[in-house]
Image (cartoon, rainbow, N blue to C red):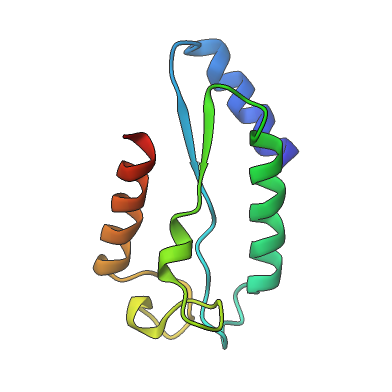
Length: 103
């Protein structure tokens, strides 16, 4: 999260007049071997915390809408057998959440 913040600082030096929207890492399916939701959730919480005090940055948890009752990526939003890549419908949901955050 601190590395991400350093990148945002560099971007803000170039464009101090811009608001930045940082989208959370989206969840993976329960059987994904690529990544684990526990790690994703930990990283997202850390990223949200470091962005909380920044006026020009908003953390957007677009992945929240993609989760099932168990907190993992809903199978309907998974486009592959790795449990990672999203369907077009999932990307629409992410975009919608981003638009709502910027309104």
